[in-house]
Every structure is written in C-alpha cells, then in structure tokens.
Image (tube, rainbow, N blue to C red; front, side, top):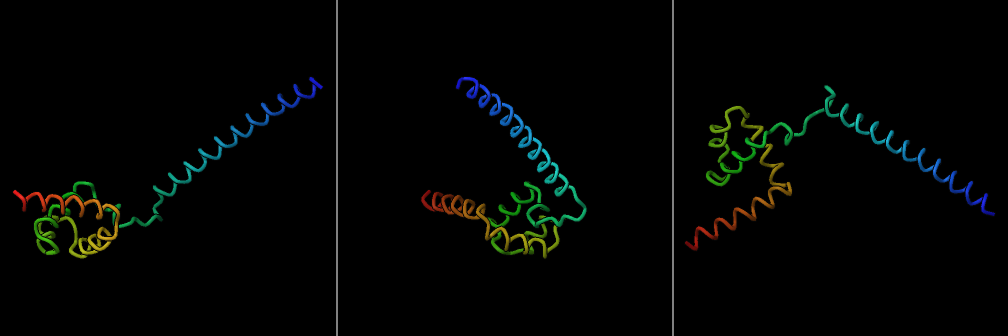
Amino acid sequence: METIKKVEKTLFKITSKRVAKNIKKLKTEDEYNILDFLVSPLKIDFEFEKWTLKEIAIFECCICLFGKKFDFIHKILKKKKFTEIVLFYNLWKKSSHYVQWKRHYNELKRNNNVN
C-alpha cells in the first residue's frame, strides 16, 4: 500500500512539473504572438494609439478652454489633421477616460463658481 502511494506521489510530481513547463512554454509563445501582432506592418492602429499622452492632455485642456471649437484646437495641435481631431473627440467622448475627465472637470467648475 505504501509503495502505491509513493508511486502516485512521484507520478504527480513528474506530471505537475511537465504541466508547469508546458504552461510556461505556452505563455512565452503567446507573448511572442502578441509582440508579433503589435510590431506587424499589417496591424492597423486605433485612433487612440496614434496620439501621445501629451497630445491627449493638450486636447483635454483645449476642450476645457474652447469647448468643441475644433478649429482652435487644430491651431494648437498643428501636427494633427482637423478630421483626426474630430474623430478623436468622438471616440474620446465614448471612453471611460472621458467619464473620469468629465467628473473632474465638473468638480473644478463647481469649485471655481463657489469661490
């Protein structure tokens, strides 16, 4: 009886090591697949990926100052086409980031009206 338990434990250890190795192997293969996808010349960038964090911050500041006057925003973000700015606005307005930004903007507005 004890020998069967020893054999079972040994088999379990061997099997679990093999499974762990296969999981690690799959994980690294998936990571390479994702990397290949990201650097592929066939990948089409989403509009959000074309904007730097600085450009997004400038865009949001412009929205605070000028509202939806995209011609003013375009004068500040000279590297962006007018149509890119409008498209970005429409995508940004549907994002979760917009919800956070709007909440923060409304708080600032309220605080400035109180003072």
